Length: 105
Image 1 (cartoon, rainbow, N blue to C red):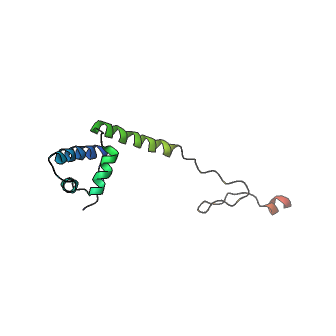
Image 2: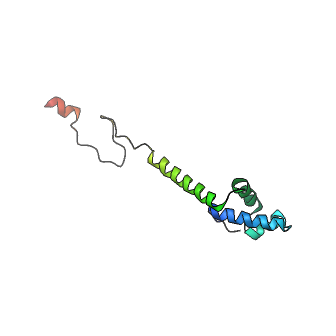
Image 3: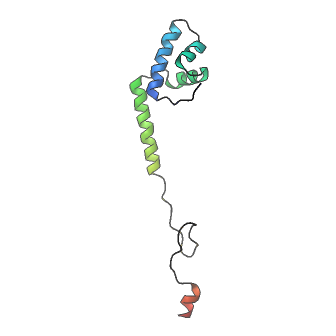
């Protein structure tokens, strides 16, 4: 089977279709094949989204996205190097007098 990512609202719709097919007497393997997913994926979806409606799945997705954005915003910014230490690679060295220049002057 081809690997796909399903949005939560798509998963909920497929689970509703699966519930209908199971009610008609089909096995889990037949239902999974009709949904074009593996049996393990169907069982995982059922455990995760079992009693959820499409609106709730959309809200869950929105909240997860918002949470990820907040986590990205809270990441600490890189600190400036301490004076006297070598700057990180990739940055030009600051123009500071060396110890011998300061002592000679």
